[in-house]
Length: 555
Image 1 (spheres, rainbow, N blue to C red):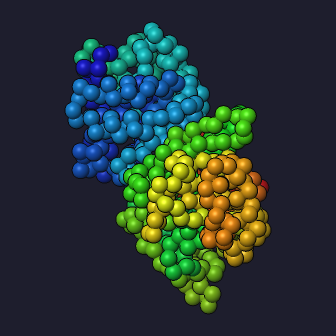
Image 2 (tube, one colour; image 1 turned 30 degrees about the horizontal axis):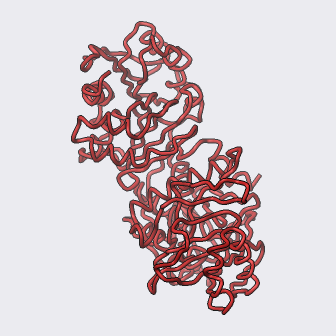
Image 3 (tube, rainbow, N blue to C red; image 1 turned 120 degrees about the vertical axis):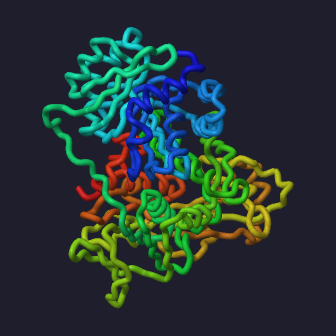
């Protein structure tokens, strides 16, 4: 199919074939499943239709399966003939990087259009836990070119992700495809095709039997929610819920947001690297993708964040590796941006002493036993204080960290790109009184003392000297004369150093234990919590989501 007919086909065969945009009018959210992303025109057409529809759903999920993703340049080239697609295609191409095997979440329109791309074989992707698709774009190569994509087992797997009433559209009209769709529970209608495709199919999932294992979708109606904690974890969860229509009250004991471990002046955003691409590596990549997208959408580049890449240096025998999507972010700026989203109210000097449930509503009480707030949904995100708010003990550990930092002149020879390894260096961070560098950090389990320690400065300098000898020499005077400054904070970690996200009791959820990777994990955990709560497509692979589930710590 040539690009000159691609948009016409997307609109006439797929959108109209599924009754869109009329079908989604007034819905809180809508989920489209596509079985072959290709050059992205079906997604761009759906996004454009959503953008121009005054009755659009508050949230549009587009879940695509593509075993062989094209390059970003191909996406742009395919959309080039259509001027109305140009800004959307540019936004898509900007996020289309590192499309390795697995699930990738791309956010647009302030997080209201969510594209989840599963880079893997169609059959394997369809074996992921069931999602509730409202529309299906049955796309991909013609049946004679890729017969496995159109065989009965694959179509049965597609049907497993449909609800009764889900509409399906396809260009494939071969008799075997029609026969197998009917066997899977679809009623069919032939429709006029587009361009080179003379006909298409419109189908409706309406089986005569009750499909096995299908349950009503857990799409909770948004109401009032209270989030306890105004650090990275709490602010990210609040923003994810507010985007879905919740009225969110954020309570925090401090008199300003980001007063705890999230008060770090500037933090490193870099994935964990492992030769075998282990669990932590895949988790951190997923997290950094979301954080970088949201930083670019909400913060001031160069002032609040900069993502020039991060150079990873392990030892003299190992070549340095550039993580192109990494950089530095000011956590407090990100927290404030999340809390400034519509539907969020922040309340400081509001320390929650305990919680209880009564009549299906959660009550949050202060130290005198007075009720501070009530809500149908509560999210605990108060770092290591979270465990004291719930009866069943969570395996949370306080972890003290000290970062060494100082100022330098604009002509400094310190590296422009952050460097990570055994320790790290972030230089050229603009503060109110000039540029600053940051190195560290210590990681001391079970300690909560916030007083700076000379021994920790010495430890940070020793690691910097091994990592970047020339940079250490340039800033050594600050360590020698005592002018080096310290940031200290107490982070919260789990036993396996992975976040804890999930439901503790009906209406009571948790998002905590980010450790020293709050910038990496907070946005991801906020989206995972919201997806679980609402029965949405997950923002990462199912097995990775399980690795973050609080259930593992309660077994």
